[in-house]
Image (cartoon, rainbow, N blue to C red; front, side, top):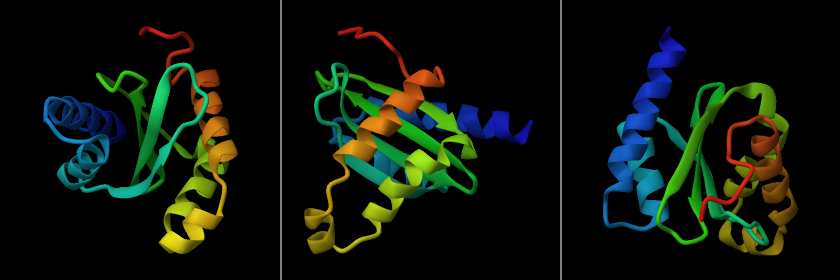
Length: 130
């Protein structure tokens, strides 16, 4: 029951932040603050037909995922448990690096793998709605 309530609160925060006239990164930070989560990562998605950015907010063992569509007009979101940890961990580790180390570390492959895993799990749309 607590996990379901947490998911509802996350989705409510996503809807509220989506209405704000701010950047995707600012929206993600706002959602993390409102829901007592910790920013896990916020990265660019290259070569995807639907998304341009993806971010994660850590809530203990769960992660709230936000994906900004190509046109920048909407955000898809979901909450995942530890089943996708192997796809999320490299992005979290990259986020913890210094800016210099981030610039020298390629994570685009990890980002694409996470998006694919989320789609395969049914957490993100498989088709373009744009």
